[in-house]
Image 1 (tube, rainbow, N blue to C red):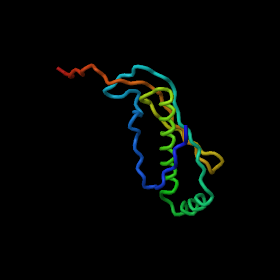
Image 2: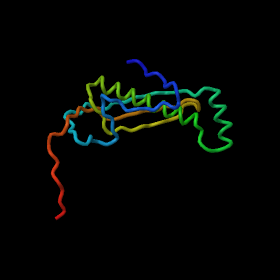
Image 3: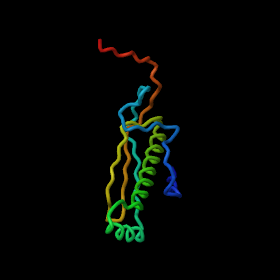
Image 4: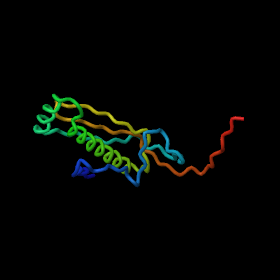
Length: 135
């Protein structure tokens, strides 16, 4: 597996994968889980450069959002999801449910982002939903 390249522009929009459903819920509406494969994950550790740290340090004096760090974390989170998807596909999954994130800082200059979930195989639900009546 090759590592996804870093987005070239901070303005780039991150789109979900088209060939794999990724959700934070434990189910996919309109589908049934036919096979639970197991845990899947994507991990990335990213270092902030010395120049970025110095710039952010001075910006923090003024208060407010430090956009440089926000953009960095958006990129890292996207890369962690891409790695999660690559891992799930390699296991034979076509969906990942119960997706979550964990982040931590290492040595004051690096950020770790860990995306995790459960790799599953899903199929469209063939059962027609029944209307609900409260009478």
